[in-house]
Length: 58
Image 1: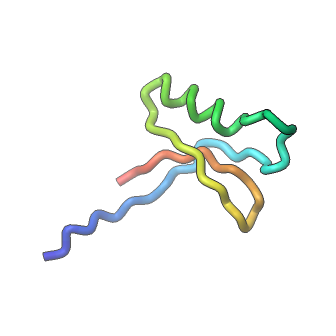
Image 2 (image 1 turned 90 degrees about the horizontal axis):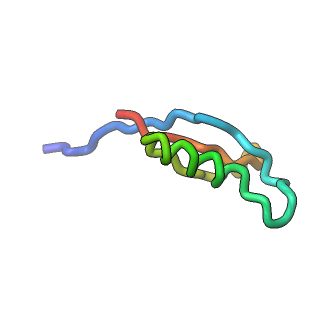
Image 3 (image 1 turned 180 degrees about the horizontal axis):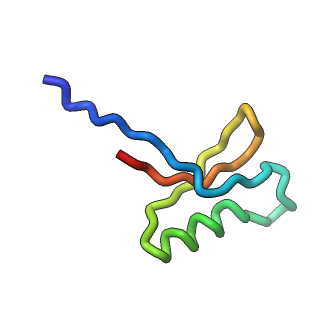
């Protein structure tokens, strides 16, 4: 029996990886989304050199 569930991600926002030192805009945005009840987290897209704020969808 296969118990694998297909998951996909929805990108809520994109942030360039070259933010000023000590600045975490993607993390701050994700925290704001979580404060509103959205299960958001940050992932790095190496191909585009961006941080993505994503949420899981079934």
